[in-house]
Length: 487
Ligand code: NAD
Image (tube, rainbow, N blue to C red; front, top):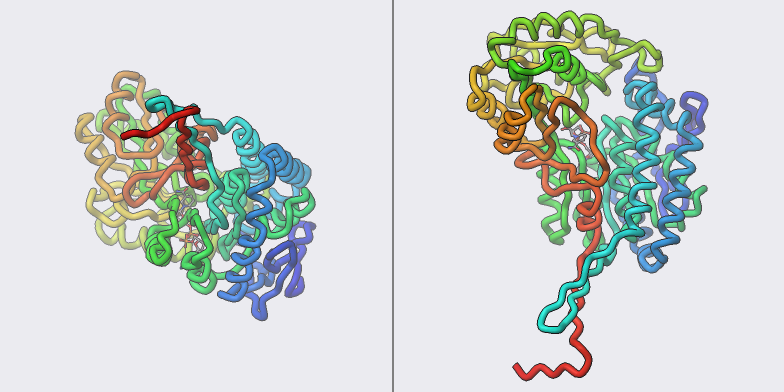
């Protein structure tokens, strides 16, 4: 490990920024540690406003060339990036696991293939992007998508490369250039992505990566007048800060934020399926924005549901995320463990009962926890914990269920377990949520919109919605030949 590179899981990773096609070091570094055992794994360049401005300048310089690159060529290069991701899936999966502690088997089988798919999907979509013309009094209205300019993309640590490429791929496909700022707790795969993009032949300055703490590098990026889009995934307070910073230039924002999503279990549900869906919420140690952390169960089946839930959850194996048999890995950082435990302590002090868990484990592991006897207006029900902590409340009617489900400041997702399709339709129509899953969880086509309402965010990403965000739409109205406006 040096101040410029490190080797993680046998993979060499450059720990400097990637700006204008060059590796750039900052005078200072910060230490990146693995959540698996807390061991240092890299000295990462600690960006400041200097590197932030240099990256925006590089993105600005590269923009005209990339925007003018024919769609087919942009698509070809994005497919080449996807090829590089596929070639290095094993390396990316291993590095990501050591860096953020999520399961290696998920990274191998689900996450990294999805990363490659993000590039392929938006490359292909780009080639089909067309809007029908409208005719008005003989005039043609022709709508086109113009790339917006340099985009700043800021991402969190819980699914680092997956969430980064979910922004990078459409932004680049649309003809924009990009400055990516990965989270300081999981900075490594963004650096590998820069290598892959360079190997794929992406021109210098089209993709830039700036490392560092959000508080030190963020404002210089988000208040920069040359930045034409900001896409952020992270917490509500950071989003509020970024929105204020972007307001100076009226820079359009897309915000994907936190949640406190419900899982509604009706008495007519397949109870084993409902239990599977509930236990699934411990995936990634609960560090999932979409996680349905509030279990709302119809009173008639609550006792049986809880019995089966406890039986299943007790069989979960917590441990090293590199082991095939592990179900739950560590949480990202000692600070996150303390934060989770703070929520649980306060809930217990307020009268909650821990049906399982309720305490930290060894190191950065937190015991999967289920709390009952919680009040609707309590902190544990209203605020996002971002750890393996679920609450269970009961309801007695559909109205009651919908009221509890909607009664937070968030609106990211909701999951229903019910055997009655008509009920599913009725309840879905009343829920405030960007995504509703009925008898399933986490499945989503990239063509569909993704995002949240209220404090869960602004805007939608996916399919056409991504292109709408990353482009300036233009309507060109052309008069018919010989037209004279006498009006
Ligand atoms: P965070 O807000 O602390 O950090 C996210 C990113 O913002 C990091 O890269 C960080 O360095 C950067 N940042 C921090 N301060 C900044 C500033 N002043 N200016 C610019 N950038 C700044 O969030 P986190 O703790 O990394 O992530 C967890 C949060 O993300 C949770 O609330 C979770 O729900 C949310 N999340 C949402 C989604 C979604 O799609 N809705 C997905 C994953 C995570």
